Amino acid sequence: MAPYPIPERVLRAMVLTLARPAADAPEAIWTAIVQGALDELDTLDPRDAIEAMFAVQIIAANAGMVDALRIAFEADTDAKHALRQRASASALARALAVAARLLRDQRGRPAGEPRDWGDAVAGFGRVGRRRLRWTPSRSSGGLTN
Image 1 (cartoon, rainbow, N blue to C red):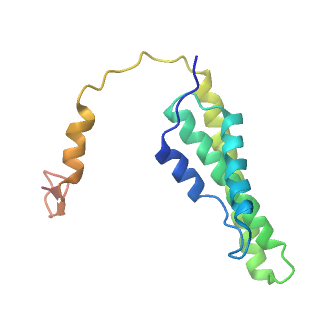
Image 2: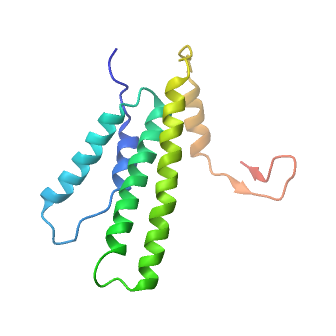
């Protein structure tokens, strides 16, 4: 079976979560960071859209956690800022663990039959382009066309 083709928008979202190198760093540094994330994604090997979502969450949480710890342990980081960064890293570690557990659980579920969505995407595309405005209406939940 061919690998699940991860949509470009998902890859773009993942790349936007990665820590940026210093502005004066060579382009090769950023390329290596992106390639590392792609290698992690390949290792996680998502097999559908839900697994891809969890895999990206794992990669993003790890990138944020590592960056927070890097900042926390820099020599010029004051104690208050270091404490905040370590707390952020701890929260991201928990989020990573949850996403990893969800990915594992998702893989344990039997795959369902593929759905035929017909022209649903085209229909929703038109709906998404219309401007919605807020009106205080209970019957419509507050949103109207």
